[in-house]
Length: 173
Image 1 (cartoon, helix red, strand yellow):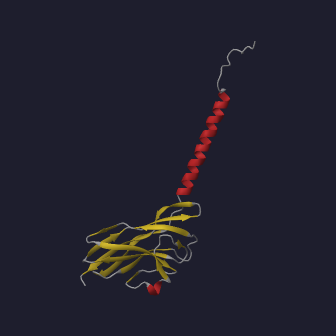
Image 2 (cartoon, one colour):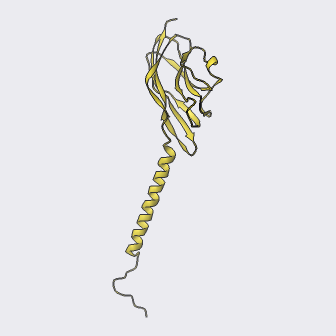
Image 3 (spheres, rainbow, N blue to C red):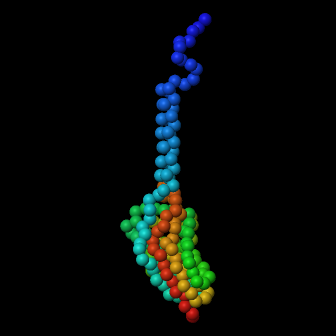
């Protein structure tokens, strides 16, 4: 016959329970930190103030809202550029990637960019910029917030505001 010593019941010893709890908390903390790290890439440069532009109704204008200058040492794989605007009239907004150049305000971006392309799926690096093509068919005004760029950089991915805001006046032709 076997005897159990008094005070020892069936179950987990207190020392083992504490070790398991600490290991579980450490694992959960490491997973939370990894999730935060992967989904929170470094911020992108922003600028105070705004770009001002004037165009005629029905005539497109190209407004540079962010430039990754030559000193920008990152390579972003862009998923998309999100624009938010308040306007007094209906407008069409189209984000574009200006490869190898930058635009202030112009009606013809070709001389300033090696190529203009859809930023979704493109890589953005030093010397590239984000331009917004704006067309309003009627006279009015437009306030454009900073663009939000959704991107991946190495193992990190997220969406960050970049650049500057813009104010546009659309005049009668």
